[in-house]
Length: 304
Image 1 (cartoon, one colour):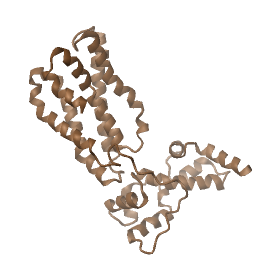
Image 2 (cartoon, rainbow, N blue to C red):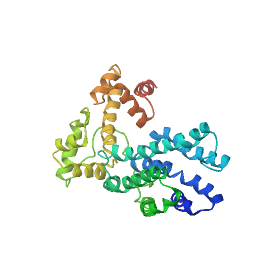
Image 3 (cartoon, rainbow, N blue to C red):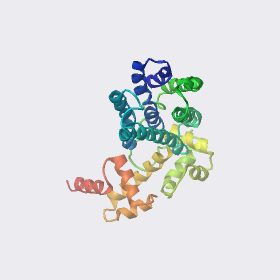
Image 4 (spheres, rainbow, N blue to C red):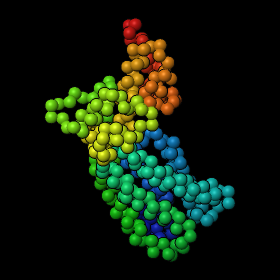
């Protein structure tokens, strides 16, 4: 909100204050990127690589302004390094944020977050991208004509910052603990839909390579929206890949313990992973160790 306020006040500010507002307003693309990562991914740590780019896009222009007092001053080389290149990074951050919104859309199991992807944050991204682009061609005196878009951006930011807990900057519901590949014991009043879901899990449908939500929904003969609702509300998963990998890894752990001579590559492919590298990556991400380390730890515990 501070960055957006600086954006609005900048054309009206005195020269001395403009240095401050200009430095703050350059943070908008970086903040938008961060908001997308925190809102629409369940594992923001995957995007730690972008923190450096985000800081560079904010700090480099600020250093230039403090040093030269104007975005037009300084040598051509320094201008490209501290002004031109950070502007390209800003475009990259915005596009990356929008890419996150779109990329995880199909696998998202939270209805409110899916709707938020559809219009709210996507619209904000378009506004920011347009504003950053127009600044390069619109004279300073004409920036006021863009006030309506700025107001829309503020309204969107307010909605985002007051989003529902667990969807936007809230505490995500804990993922189910990795124990075994069996679903919870069904009660007598369980619905037909839940029985179909349990049966699919017991039959090992999750081992199918390239399994998608649409394929899974067709297999249990339910609409996609109902399948999302079941997996999210009944089992507690926030996205479809985590649901599939939960049961794949539980099954893989059992194989690693019970069949110590079975090649890890064979286990990975049998569980539905496309390659042993993807299996290792997902395994370590969820259990904090590689399959080889897990197998050795199990063998050591057995000997003890």
